[in-house]
Length: 171
Image (cartoon, rainbow, N blue to C red):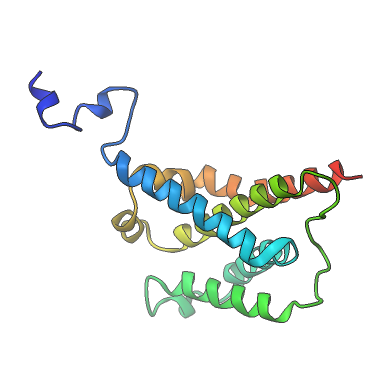
């Protein structure tokens, strides 16, 4: 009964719940809200272009000289964001891909893709920042959802697979 007086410390013993569950839930709701705002703000045309540009920017990050990132622990994430913004600004007609508005299920496709693109961008950014700095910003549970090695691979692969599923479903 003594362990329950403190309130939260007994939670890890019950099903592995987080001690910072309120912060994790706040992050989750903020992530979902910002993802939906991203989908509504950019719309179906630009959302797919951002997805493709994120892959291109990540490929550039992998081949750029390591000396470029020595100035700051945030340099890699900053270069990624700069490349993403530049590519998104110049690709007006580079890619003619979009989420089709055909059919009655347009909104669920937009919501799913906005969540997946936001998750992928969050995963990339969190994995580019050193782990010690990232864990100072978010809880270990959120880190494991977005930046653990296996989940990073999933966040990179799932948006493309979802896009294939969504576009094949329309044919």
